[in-house]
Length: 176
Image 1: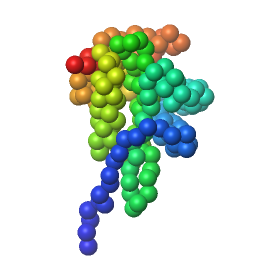
Image 2: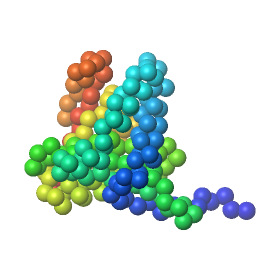
Image 3: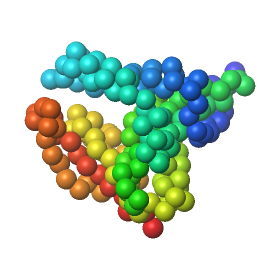
Image 4: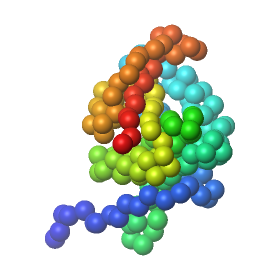
């Protein structure tokens, strides 16, 4: 009897409109995890998530001159969306990494690294010089440690204008 997990092939591809339901669920599940942390409000997180889901993730990124990707797992011949990330163009030389999320069942298997590597390769190929992102303090230490391990550097910490009790951590990576 074999106890090995079946081999799963992960691919990164452009978002398609039919991915919307899976993307929304992964994003929702990923952020609702933070509502379980002591001192966090489930209602506040739910409201934030619903506000975010009203915006068109892919459209916002693509219309700015960026792009939006999904990670898919091929399991038993079936393609399943297991992660997402967007790049929003902010100027001719820089853009923001947005809405990074990986399905809980596929975390710690390199999916996030593949998504970010794809985004960085795309940004370099399109002559961007810098990629930055912001992440809330509640997402530390795991998310922050992840971005640092990918060569991003912490640039500043600022209070969220809508709620000064929340600190935003700004990371950037210069592209060469």
